[in-house]
Image (cartoon, rainbow, N blue to C red; front, side, top):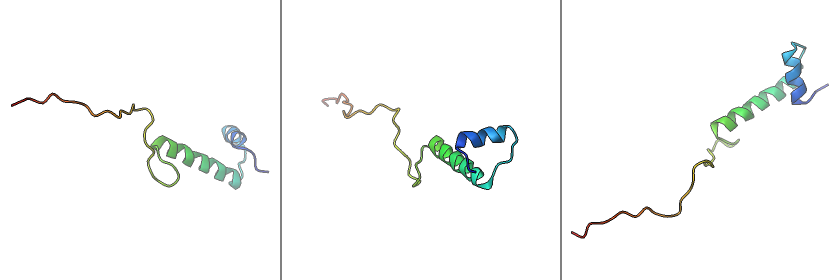
Length: 66
């Protein structure tokens, strides 16, 4: 019987027997977590950051008249 991910992690903490199909669930979860940490989605492209403020204005510099 294949359990959900939380149950599999609990079984691993208790050193219980984990089925190969359950290990695949764990490996997929770890892969998704790593991709999230790296800031990439499943197609390998980096996502733009959402923490940096965006500005549509161009900074103005003072230009000398000479």
